[in-house]
Image (cartoon, rainbow, N blue to C red; front, side, top):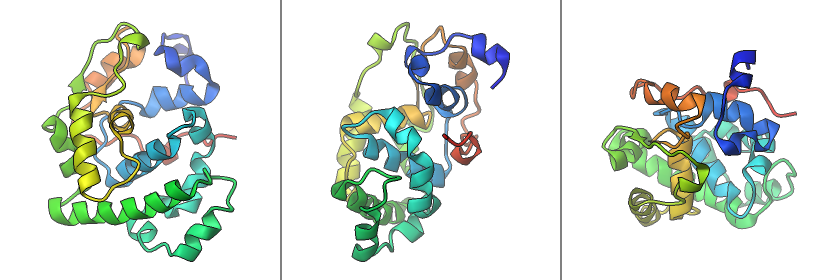
Amino acid sequence: MSQIQNLMKRCAWADSHPLHVEYHDVEWGVPSRDDGHLFEMLTLEGAQAGLSWTTILKKREGYRHAFAQFDPHKVARFSAAKCEKLLQNPDIVRNRLKVESTVDNAKAFLRVQQECGSFADYIWGFVDGHPIQNHWTSIRDVPAETPVSRAMSKDLKKRGFRFVGSTICYAFMQAVGMVNDHEVGCFRHGQVAVTPRATSAVRSDRLRRPS
């Protein structure tokens, strides 16, 4: 992170923990059409349910190792015995429903790819292929869900996905740049807004590993 970036104003939530800073400055809100990254973020946002995002960022590397670098083809083949073993892994959230749902979601993810060509083509269809550009002046103005996230949640559930409630879907949309919810005073708001919509997000494995 440059000294210039460090002095610039960020979204209020980004300064709440050191782990948030680089995630905010590099990844959050950048339009992503990389299916591997989309599956990763769908998994992590579901894992966050009831927990803090800080907890998930701390365990992100553990998730990568535990879930085959978020390769849906490999995760979809996880056996019941493999899931039982994962429940003993302290590097992830050891919640049976969340672990098993990740396997189910991988299977559903592959079905969507087969039907639509890519998961990106399917999911970006909810915003007609273009990021929604918001102009919030305060974190208090940012919604927890929207009609789009509710429609997405409903369709994902119909397709067999789990841990995809409307608020989780909206957090996912924010994370992968389907919506630009950087505050207007944040230095990233304008940068994200001009990101070419055909460009994938910086892959998360290029971010600094949490210690």
